[in-house]
Image 1 (cartoon, rainbow, N blue to C red):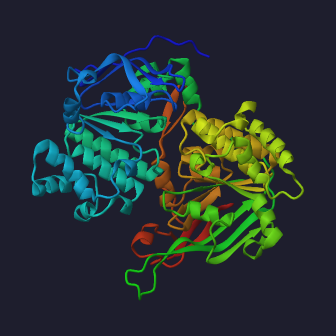
Image 2 (image 1 turned 120 degrees about the vertical axis):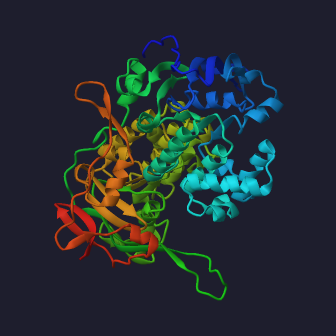
Image 3 (image 1 turned 60 degrees about the horizontal axis):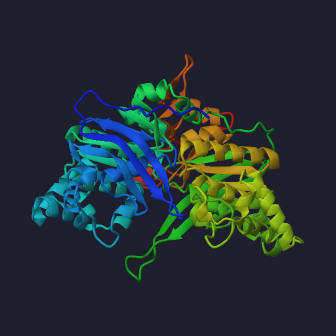
Length: 603
């Protein structure tokens, strides 16, 4: 392990707006001792600049941001140091003074906007409330300001937005509303705590572009908390790299992330996605899963009870093949139908049309013992490990559940195999008696993988298995999955919106949008020669850090334009799906190269 160095200090040339000086924060443990989570941290944020706090989960990033607003959890407290805003120590401010600071001087955008927005109140009520309180505006003037700010964050219909409730919007729209709610107050400093972690690549880029352009226009400083090194390299002016509450390296973004000096900084960057890092060499084999013209529909509520309920097609005529031992990545933005398709393949969703064949058998026709055997052979790893694990059960019992329907296996045998599987995924022997809440996010995901693999399935659906994990933990989980796949030989449908993760694991890539497949092909073809404009747009929205040939690192982004469609064809316009579904007619998958197909229409 690298020796720890004294904490450096970032002090930009301009007179700083925010100064954090020798900050120490600790958390009370169950045995009443205190564990330090932030240790002697010092840095500064200059007016109009973007400073980013970067580090793995548990590095103290969020604690620093919350300490500035006196919003630490009850078990946490500041032991030493100062946080100065324009020369005033926020840690000494009274509750009344802090109420004036919050919102008006410092605004904060949280990771999950649905938690921050009140589901029982309209957006208009929530946005105007703070303006009335801090500035004494009447309803009309407050609404006027809110409408102007909603337009600036590119909300299409601001008036309708003010009348709506938070649950009526997508995640990206809610984050825009949250950003507008904060910036309408005109704060000097914006603290953005993982503002785009739960969003797909395109929406993430849109939200970040809006946030950075608006804050630069308004002269607002930004303290950006993130574990996404590619995104930080794209937007931040200065970086403070944290590990276990200490600063490891700090300075201008380009120097810290592209030419790191501290061993930990280099180790962290070495955890960044590398093409094919987790791919396993395997011979081409016959198909295991064959999907033909699959449709999955959901009935929506009818506006009038006597009218027929409209139908939403989440998956619309999809054809897909997964070969034995192969990893197929299913990518696309939120709402594209990826998870619905994955759930349909393990019969958690029923198809309304088309067919799914597993090893030559029609899945819809399986009954009784055949269906039980099919469920043992097809397993799923879910996105949120905490929600998918029973909080009342110990880990050994959770994993043993996957063997409950194995013929002839008694309970003691199931427990022995469950413990062996926990060891297989890299968890210590004593973890079997623990409960899910005692584990970190990465450890919980290992338990989910153990539960899915314990029955030795032939097909695994991994739905965003590393979306909520930091880059180091992501790499560990991906390498674990690759190792298990090499050992047990299962096929995998890997669902993700993060193309930098997909680049590490996929043999083939399938691009989905609004229930349709727009492009599919080998990993190298999709990344090096994307044909459909939507695929190119996805890649352009994913900045990636990569090793430079001359040493150090470089920011790699997709440039250029897609190749023209084959003669007599035009690429299916994915935008038409939003306005007039299939106005161009049904797309046809046209082969442009060997095993590389693109959705096209006749011209």
